[in-house]
Length: 389
Ligand code: NZQ
Ligand code: ZN
Image 1 (cartoon, helix red, strand yellow):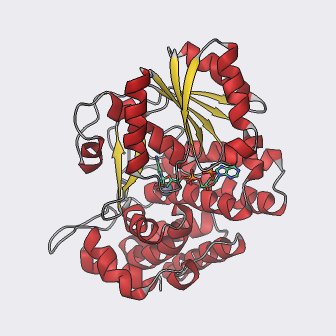
Image 2 (cartoon, rainbow, N blue to C red; image 1 turned 120 degrees about the vertical axis):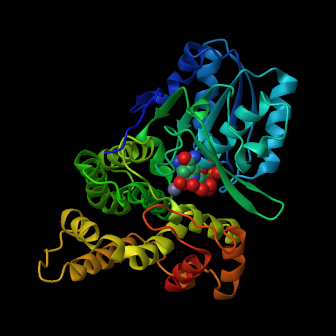
């Protein structure tokens, strides 16, 4: 196991009705003037926004609001939010929504207290400070409610890039599984795929002797394999929703990834798909992950056979572990198809002729690589896109 530091100070408030405590927690974490930041309207239609506002009023906390965050959140609204916060002397950002609203809120939080262009952070500048961010989560997916990461798309060139830093970890996150019951089945499945992908990015590692995190990863995956079909069948199944919602947090606050090298090339490869076609991140991952796994499997057949046996219930073929490994990938594909995810470019609506452009936008050049399990060159990435056709 590698050396590591783990600091995850988010205060989680989980369960039915917990959104009504938003005001209480904003106050506890020092907010006196709040920007409520939300998406395209689901929180208005469900009445959630009104309940959150009522809880702020109850605590006597003043607020302004900015809606309109799109899935794959854009930089334009971030600039608008930064300006609004400065004009209104906002000292706390409350995201109400999914990963997109939370990521946009984090970008605003970092940008308000920075003299330069907030995009600098998405080009690699370290984030030293940010306004505090709280969240009321409405979809189990990105894990942004417990992570120090934010992903934003710059309209100019449709560049989708991530930034990270401890200052971006939400100070509190409110998770009420009931709020996810209004999600369309497709969005539920996209979120579930993203959660599983966050585990895969950590599971496929060259670090040895990582039994505890292997087993934690497998626990999250087994939970998803059991619970996702239950919510697809019955969207109002609270207990299945609750298990998935907590799995989404656990999958990405790095508890299951400490002490091991992590890969993350599939996320980078996927981000080019969601940037170019504006598809859901989870759907893009469903297309990329099986192709990536097929391409890199030979790096560690035993690890692929291990997940096939422990998570997908395959029987170990000791004479030919590669067969077991392949069977695991096939079962993943079947699972993704069964929950309504696309697993090919064709099903996603992506085009073969755009592959060179996506490879180029990754900026690897002649000699650059991405990923750690296998360091992929631009040519490798091109092959992975082609395996996904
Ligand atoms: O915008 P509204 O109207 O709210 O509708 C949203 C949106 O259309 C809808 N939705 C959310 N909760 C709902 C609901 N509809 C009905 N009922 C509800 N309860 O679902 C759609 C997707 O929402 P979004 O916030 O985009 O979903 P998600 O949480 O999957 O976030 C995706 C973004 O997060 C990034 C992705 O790249 C993508 O941009 N990621 C962020 C990460 C992080 N910060 O750590 C890590 C991830 O790997 C990921 O890259
Ligand atoms: Zn993701």
